[in-house]
Length: 264
Ligand code: MG
Ligand code: MG
Image (cartoon, rainbow, N blue to C red; front, side, top):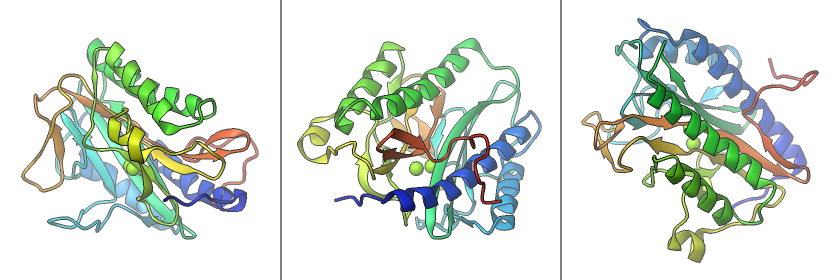
């Protein structure tokens, strides 16, 4: 069972959320042809360290511990790409995923950027993926159960002619980055039977649709981390940490509003 957070706890979670938002603004400015994914990761790490935030991704256990503070996944890479010497080229798309802990609370968010000018169909993939996240956020204030949102997300992506990745899902988030419940971006019998949850005040989840241009199937690469599409076609990923409040969903990793107190 997942934990519901108090209004005070949710307000605390806005701090790592804003730091993650800010880290993404910094990363976005660096995305251009000729930049390496390692340079983007180094800038995000410096930002977190300077702001007393603990990067959440570095050291995550696996066959080898994850070595960076961001996951950077290019083109057909879906998630968990390792930043390094890879150079970004005009026409690429680059998914940047990062999270931090601040004052004991976690934030997690991902954005896929175009590198220079990209093909129209690739831009449509980005628009559909950010669009399905926006759809989910809007529906969270209007539906009572997650399965209703997940079902509409699946339909939205299918209608666009793309596919939702099913092997990776979103998650509850709070004191730890990955908490209950699991938050799939599609509906299944398993979700309806035993995985469903109410969209009630206090719920805090990371919603993170991954959308593939072709098959939904993914494969692991030999670096033990990177997941890529099986057909080599492009994939996009957008994620926000979202809290349910009595006034509706609050995007904790979204931009500051005017006069909002920021932790830096
Ligand atoms: Mg993430
Ligand atoms: Mg996540």
